[in-house]
Image (cartoon, rainbow, N blue to C red; front, side, top):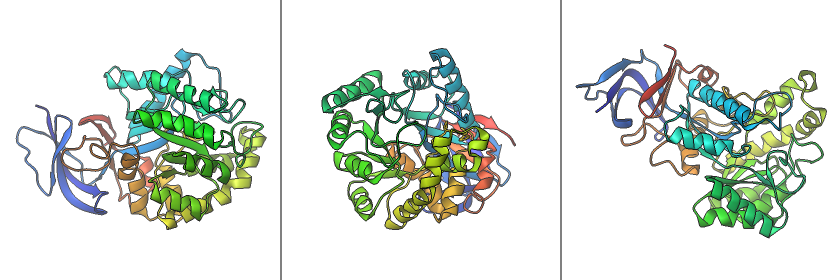
Length: 391
């Protein structure tokens, strides 16, 4: 039996929105006890020196195969994609991220990396992956996706991702920022095409996420039965009401727009991408605020791998959410227990409770008051094992 006790820490309870002095006992990778004082007999005791103990963070919109360069590199061979992915995954662990949802890999490298991690062949966050995104011919993401046209082809494309081992189906409902010649507001796969792909996933218990930025494409995806809306630049009350009624999550990826806007063409980002961001960024923030006020379930995701959107900057999404008006506790929940609910792992992940997997992160300061301080993670615990320590 392996036992650890994390002592002299402030335990962040995202379920009850409170922070208390306490200790956490971990046995064989699971949280065994949480309280003011826990049984430490036979345990390795780790003194956290008054620091804050959080559930490990989630990042629910990543692209592990991609480097955050000014312009995306497509066409790398599988060896380079794999090396890049493994290096990016190390960055997540170093920054307190213990669970990712990857929503667009290349050549099924994401699936093979996930499989290797589950077998213990490499150290990586827990993860769910989607294989290739499904897009219309020439649509957003076509360089790395599975192009499909018509409901039957979209159904086949979804089946191909499921056969390869995808946990989620990623479908492109609109154009996007980083593909030249398409526009964020323009619908792409139509409602019938989206529904065909989504149905195939749902038949085997796989959820579906839609890249959708314009309102027509978002509404198509919602009516088609999608489980999460990514980016969501333009949404109205109808969208919010539908999402609440049908338990659809919103992953706004504020960071993706932010880093393009602050770096601009001067940093080498393509002009067409900067133009699209400048035209939509305020509407995106307003939609985020309105969705939050309406009570839509919001989840942390950064779109890491897009320009200057680094894999070690997950916590900056919390900064952007709070700056845009989200209450700090709600932002923390978006990156922990609400994210776990969306991924269907809230029984085992997302909070510090007895019986859950011991995925933990340690920070110097109160995360409800210093989100930017969370960019410096002092310790990461994955399945009860310390995988990063800077104390």
